[in-house]
Image 1: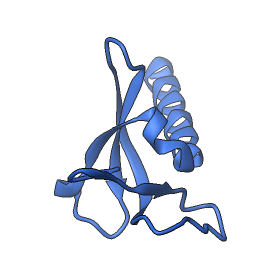
Image 2: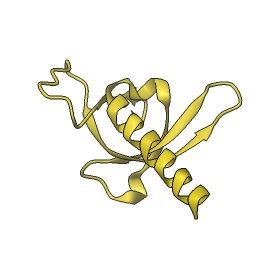
Image 3: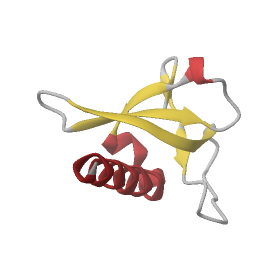
Image 4: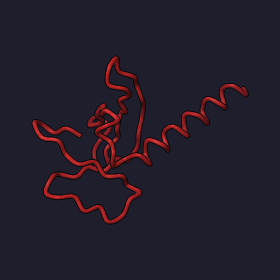
Length: 88
């Protein structure tokens, strides 16, 4: 997550014992959406734990290395939603 001119570490809420040096730490509460970019892969709309939805930010997947479980949970949720629409 970018805050001003500095990059902050992103934590996966499922991982324990996160020990990150000095930088600010932000925890991903949920992945809300995904969109493709022309040259940088995917971006995810992140809901940050402890912050209002108005503070959600689009983050490149490469900035979310500490939140891979949240990304996988989002992908599973989207697959299940798609299956539900196909069977309706």
